[in-house]
Each structure stands twice: as C-alpha cells, then as structure tokens.
Amino acid sequence: MPSDPAKMMLGNRDNEKQLEEINKKYHFDKPLIKQYLFYINDLSPLSIHNFSDAVSYPNSFCLYSDSKTSFLIKLPYLRTSFYQKNVLVTKLISTSFFNTIILSFLAISLALLFAIPLGVLCAKYKDTFLDKFISSVSILGMSLPSFLIAIIFAYFFAYHLAWLTGLNITGSLYEINDLGERKLQLKNIILPSLTLGIRPMAVIINLVRNSLIDELSSNYVLLARSKGFSYLYVIIVHALRNSLTSVVTTASGWFAGMLSGAVFVEYIFGWNGLGKLLVDALVNVDFPLVMGVILVISTCFIIINILVDLIYIWLDPRVKIV
Image (cartoon, rainbow, N blue to C red):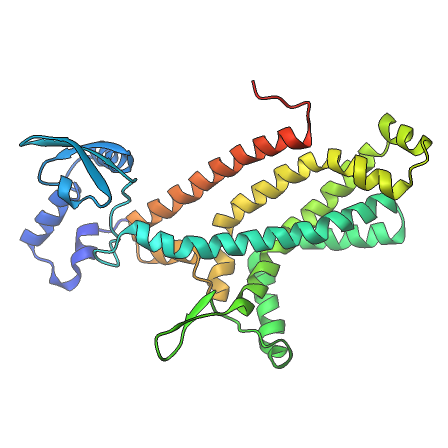
C-alpha cells in the first residue's frame, strides 16, 4: 500500500521536477482531507474547478467561467489509471462491466432455474429420501468456497475431460485471434457461471423448502385444498408466490455480491470482468482504478436494493410505498 503514485506514473523516467509537477497536478502534495474533497469534486456532476484545469475534464459542459473559476456539469470523473498511463478509469471499467454483468446474470439465472423446482420437490416430499438427499447436497454446495469449486471444475471439465467438453480453462467472452479480430466465445462462460451459481443455488433450495413448508400450513392452503384443487396446483399457484419474498431478497443479495465476489472465479478462469480488473489494480497499486471499481460495485448494490423493494410490492400486495 505505501507507494508513491507520482513515481509509479513516471516509472524509470522520474526526476525531482517531474515528480513535483505530478504531485501538484493530482494534488498529492495536499493534506489527505483536501485530497478527499478534490476527489468528491471530481465525482460530483456539478463541480468547481480552476479555469486552467476545466478543459481536462471529458464529457463536461461549462455553465459559467471567468478568469479564475469554472462551473461544470459533467459525468462523474474517476480520473486516469496510474498503471495504464493517460487511460481513463471509466474506459477500463466500461470494457469489463458488461462481462461481469453477463456472468453474474447467467449464474443467478441458472441458480434460480434449478433451485426453485428442487426446493418445491423438497417441500412436497418433506422428510422423504428425496428431500434428505437434495438437502444434503445443497449443504455441501453451501460449504464449498467458490474458488475451490472453480479449481475443481477447471481440473475435471477443462483439463481431464477437455476432449469431451471442448472447454478451455481460461478465456473471456471475446477473444482476439491472430488477425486482430474479436470473436465471440460463448463456451467460455459455461464453467464460470456454473461455479458462481452453485452456492446461491444451494442457499435458495433451502430457503424455498423452508418457506414453502411454512406456507403449506396456512389456512388459505387448507381452504384451497377443501375446494378440490390438487396439492401441486396449490403449491405452484398459491403457496409458492407467497414464499418467494425471502428468495428475492437472497437472490438479489447474491447477484449484487457476484459483482464483487466473482474476483477469484474471474481470475482463475481468466474472465475479463470487474473482479479480474480489481485484482490487477490491487497488484499494480492502481488507486484510482481500485476506487473506481469499488464505487461502481457500491452503486450497483444500491440500485439492486431499490429494485428489490419495488419487486416486493408485486409479490406482496400488503407492502405499500409510504
């Protein structure tokens, strides 16, 4: 951590005058509180800058300017990378963000696709061999960390069984061939998405099972059964929807967590997403890139939580926005 950003940016070409100029340009010579305020000013859509510095902000519009000060409206400015000189942090994040969203969305979709039916089966056949077997396997899935599952999957399906599966140990959504052309490689997303989906699937199976068992003891279920509806119909049409509230909470939390928790999985499989970008930034002590990735992940957490609150209204009519 205790690195000199100015020396990192200049590399072997640093001298005292250049170091002074870099420290002055990026405010490294100021106290930490002032550096923080300058960073907040860069993030703010409405910001105040010196007249000479205002022209260096991309995607900005000047509201007012005089000989000393400029008032700008702009997109949040995350500065430039220390390691990849003169490259905007927003550009680096934008190239990786889509890959992480695709990977996380597919992983949570696979988890829900398998977990909900398996949870329903466990609740319908409570305390039978099928229920105990699925519950035991799901507990095993919860206990295994993602990076260990990634190594196991890569070893078996992409190394020993590569002749059968045709999968690669490493690879991203797009790969560049010898001619410099980008080629879509959908097969590279199979192992990372399965690896990320196992743990949330295991958790959701148990949630669906326990919530559904509680719902099936409710009075409205007994009323529906007394009207002649089949047990499976009552589960799917009536009880399942009321038991999905906790599932939505868990799934949204896992989806948001995948944006940051996919670090090891992306790094092991060579998937060019936010997780791998964050690891590379930490290894290279690239502070602006680390801060940018963390801010993007935090923003996604907030947005997802807001969307979940809106989904609650659809799932449970008793929930009202005050």
